[in-house]
Length: 127
Image 1: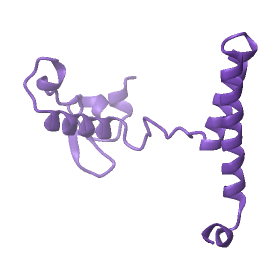
Image 2: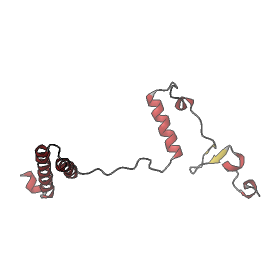
Image 3: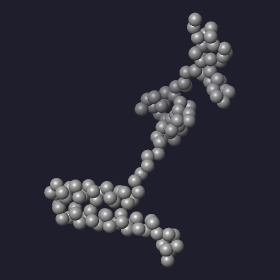
Image 4: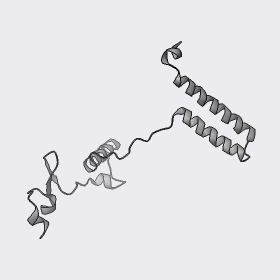
């Protein structure tokens, strides 16, 4: 017994292959429309029209799915400490021992200063 006999939906895309009903209630073709300008790298289409078409297709294909979730970025203090760690590692392996150690100390001092400033109450900072 195939899908056609079991299906009660008259607009089922699997049954007739041409029409299905979206969640919003409108009927759309089962197969996506093809924009040949988007398919070919040499297709003549403006940057604005290309971006709009790609956004439209992405919205249609991946509705409700975040394709590029936000990536948490390290704070300025964390960045300073990571750079200081890298410099100390290079210094320990024999590369510019004094210069890298001095720069690592400077970065750690900056990170400590930012920590101190960020933990102060707002009133104390404005004085």
